Length: 352
Ligand SMILES: Nc1ncnc2c1ncn2[C@@H]1O[C@H](COP(=O)(O)OP(=O)(O)O)[C@@H](O)[C@H]1O
Ligand SMILES: [Mg+2]
Image (cartoon, rainbow, N blue to C red):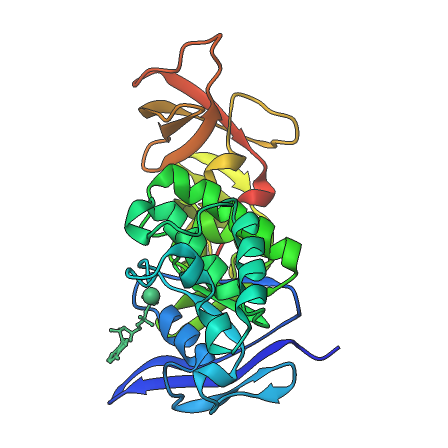
């Protein structure tokens, strides 16, 4: 099956500054895709090129096999939602949602029916007479979503639509957006710098850095098998452990005096050379745990109470390892300076 959205060698330069550097990806119909990366990496520029608000320096954009690279925005049949509330302040909710339909010449009666349908979809039935200033930020963004969806676009483009909202609303609204997207089966490109947001609602994630794609994959692939050091550190927490290689053939290293066999060493590994291992906080347990073949002893360096989770920092000597434990109301959290034994599976000690 041909891809629904295919971008090839997409490039954008502003003067001598190339901010999107030959990006290619292909997605299927109905996929929810996130462009994830730090501020300034080119996410918005890519979205605006797909939408037609920004010209393309090089490369092509195809939707359903049609080359749309040089079409005007209104010829692309795409719906867009921006970061800041971009509702028309002088129009009520009904007229905001019906705006694109009116431009397309839809008769008033049909328009009203479609606006009603959209208001039910976003959980705001009966709100058509309200004005944007009479609504919360979360409600305004739902209206912006409804306005984008109303003309039945073939694709939805969302540029950090949740970033201006407070944390609780951000989480509930992202789940709502995902539910609506699945319900409609509409192919969606969602831009965010928030890794948790991207991982939680996407079918696939494009991790970007400085105008390039670092990795493209399902959330669990990005998180569990980061392709680069950048992805490993940008997506989720990561421990970096300094180890001394003991015997390259046996793949043994010393971590602060503990001898451990690791799954891989670099091809050029040599005895007595330092190497960096990485480890996710959640694969480390306090005490022994089934399947964990490495036991390390140290002292508690720091305890951060986060509610359902307690983050511990354990000093092994030179190395300090962060790990997360669930808050258990029946026990008292460890205290700084206490001796502690931690365990992990050696297969989780990775070299990037
Ligand atoms: N119209 C413009 N003129 C010049 N530089 C721009 C313009 N738009 C964006 N840029 C630059 O392009 C880079 C990528 O911007 P952007 O796509 O907005 O990043 P992101 O959305 O990932 O934060 C930034 O360095 C930004 O300053
Ligand atoms: Mg942006």
